[in-house]
Image (cartoon, rainbow, N blue to C red; front, side, top):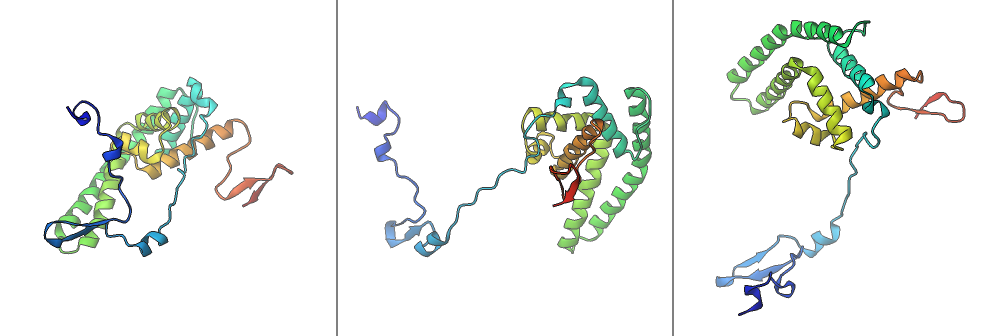
Length: 217
């Protein structure tokens, strides 16, 4: 019995895929990878590091009270409200009422764009722009139904499961766009930075460690 009948395929009989290769089949037909030696010499390998802003898990993620404070504050900001004194439940209810008040306007806007989308079937570029706007409004409506759950999921998936923003978005079925994932993470850090009295560093600024002041970078 041949060895291949009882063992895995032997490495010596495996053909490695080559970037440049060509062979002739029956009838003299040439088959190649489509890459020439000139193309091969011009090729470059690039590695892109993830812009993962979650290298270290913030300490407040392990503090239940602070974690809730961050989530409630983010929901209030989403509703366009300033933080007020009260229990977490009272603040969440106030923010949810404000978000629910915007739903009729958003639904009307969504129906308007859907009408334009149906009426402009001859313009693919315009339809694509409308589709992006429709998807954006639809995501907002879905998030506004339970914003605290989505925010908590983003923070957990990003810092505890170590997912980057596209990975977090995919885990949430695309409801939360990667851009919004990064915004929530950045804003949560800003909220926590305010507790220490140091404030949050703005984009484009870096600390001057000699003077302790910020300077443009």
